[in-house]
Image (cartoon, rainbow, N blue to C red):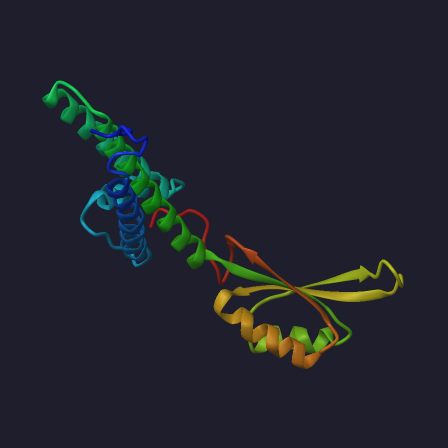
Length: 208
């Protein structure tokens, strides 16, 4: 039984900590495998197969949330059956249910993290006197579009040009280095964009 012994020490605390560690490692490992399978349009022939079927008919649904809901339903249903068969339950049963739900949470969080990394893009904003050369580099070398804005300096009130473009995460580091070579004195900011939709990036929801 779980609880405090006569000295006030939690019984089986070490075993419980190992179970929690197992939930963490198992959840992350499972989420990594399932997330990578989803990225290439496949599955591990488990619950994620049901997720893919639901996703086909409900394109706006998120894989990570669907995985958690299905896993949680299985855990709760299994726990109810286990308690009914035993005609009783103990603190150990409650702990196991809680740890199983933790595993489902870690799995869903890992899947979501993989999708965020895959879909992440970087938006670059560059204020520079060499904006024409930077624009040419973005269009010809990066094969990306860009937008030019008129901006005014808050301190000097001088008119300047700002070039804004969005590139893949892979391109961002090289782009930063090349832009700083073109104009070492430019004002350059990089912002992570979770999702970018349009030509050269993701399409909005499709039924494919």
